[in-house]
Length: 234
Image (spheres, rainbow, N blue to C red):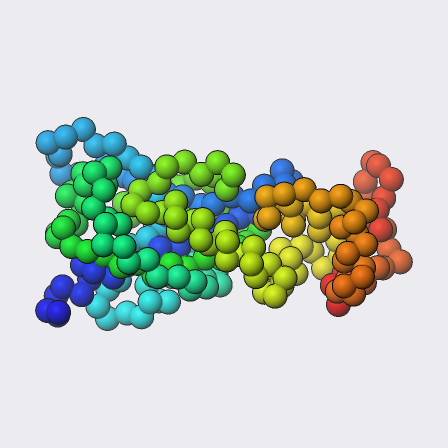
């Protein structure tokens, strides 16, 4: 491979999941493509996409993911986890993506392999702002992710599968809940991530049996309804 061709073939894409506790939703952070300054012979139709871009020749993959996320959304300092590599030869050759590639890439025909990262945060902890070729940044419910550019729907799906598979081993609930929480908060989080519902009694029984949480003597304060018992993780 020629030295100057490296950047044409490797990219990173970032799947940022935000947990909206107030509305009990898991959402994905997407960018809306910006219309380029140079004129197009065709009408430009922006798409939603994951924050992603090509890797510079002089940077590592982790550094590239952090840079790209900051450039496109002004979000930084997240614990991005590499989880999969997508290399289908046709992933950037679909008709719906050709116009964007022709306007933004020096070699729109180049095959691009992408390394994907994900993280999961409390939604209110970050304030994304569009930058670079992102016209807008939006949160979309993972239950209703719109058609995305390239193969980004597949990337979101695999990231969700990965989180669901490692929900307990990676101690994701501990990262997203306050130090002291109610059983309702814990159940809501699990239901949002797993996209399912649980029987309240069975859910509580299961967690007490697994011996991963500790029931505290404290109860909620400052609520208008009957205060619930508080718990914490061991």
